[in-house]
Amino acid sequence: MFHIYFYRRKKDLTLTDAHIKFYTIPLELRSTSYPKRLKIEVRKGVKKCDFQERIAFSQYGTQQVILKCHTLEQTMKNKIAAALERKDIRDFFDAEFLLRNGVMLKADKATLIKLKELAGKFKEKDYKVALGSLLDKETRNYYITNGFEYLIRKISAILSTH
Image (cartoon, rainbow, N blue to C red):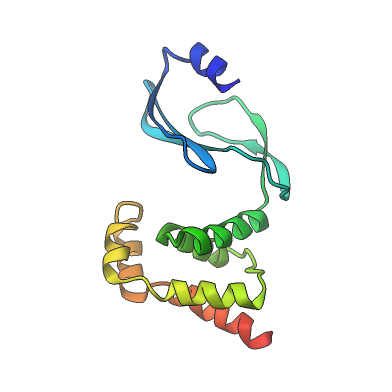
């Protein structure tokens, strides 16, 4: 289905990157009418998950589209699973971001212990290189100085009640 849509939009869009990974097919598109890139990640399999219907909003257009998307709680579950599996600093950053924005961190004790352990293993270089290009200077400096201290503190607080 995507190839049909892409074929129709070919004059406006350019596929700049595409891979076939084990679980996903990541795509990167550029538009002739917008300077930034759109990254889309399509999962190969379907897992049972919590979702909700939301209206997609864009400040660059007036068309509204209803999408089925993960709940924030489901996104947190996915980020925890990804952090434990991939050990990628971006997954820990995303989990902390969700936590800072009011999404509860719900996991069993063993998962929380492992998450806390892994969150404390990143070095200054990891924050500078892996997160460096994604964050503004102020936020990057915060993480270089503090690491995932907030995430680790919150996990410790949850573990103290288990």
